[in-house]
Image (cartoon, rainbow, N blue to C red):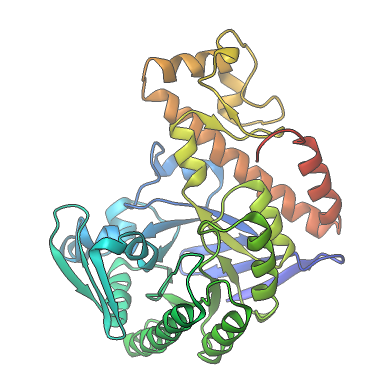
Length: 373
């Protein structure tokens, strides 16, 4: 499923190719998040033109709406959404985690109330795998128990133990499906912010021999320093021969840290969410287009960006779209942010192949000195 193309001589950074049912994907790779089988403010044609070959959708949301009956009738997510490239679906575990007042977690599964209409639902690890098989997901994620910073060692151990239990049951359901070559199931390492639990979780998940491994439970509110410490600690346990996925990161500084630690795949709603509110990535850091300072600016969002938005529109015009609440504003900003990240990751891959990743990282972060990535 995964082959290494190049490795950096001064870090764990590497380039590779993940072979999936709907085509090969070069890594490192950023996956745009299309929670409801659509990346907000962009068409699938836009995503394909930008070069994306793998996007993410959300099992929790799709299970609730449009529901499994509709998706089964359409033959899965690809035909339903007319996206003919790869789709990774997360398990919905993070969404259940976010709905803490409305859910109960037991070893047998999760009981929760819909955020849409308050209706009650129960999902087991097997249910979650079966749902993603109905979706026809190229990469499936098992149900896991995500926890916030600051909980006790006992609470973190109990959650990690449930994640491992669910991982084994998810794997058994996946194997029963007979769809292992078409629908790849990744394991998820948890353990909160306790190093012994991270190691224990890694041992238990790796023993199940999933095709790929994900790191969960990071970038959930901890400081950047703690994030780096636990990323490095956890990544050290990951096998070289399998794709590695860090869940929930999507800013250049976090992406660079992930790649430096040998991570191949990452996703986040942040780049598209801030775009819809008028904040964009540039080579000098993030800027808020709604600010008055951009009102008369004829400059592009980023003079170094070759995307069609930067070739065509000025900051002043895009600011005007946001101030007048024209839908084109969020569309242009979203397109730019994803174009920026796609180009950024391409440059990372080139630097790894040229054995200059460390220099690229230092140069990029130095160019944004004083800015916020």
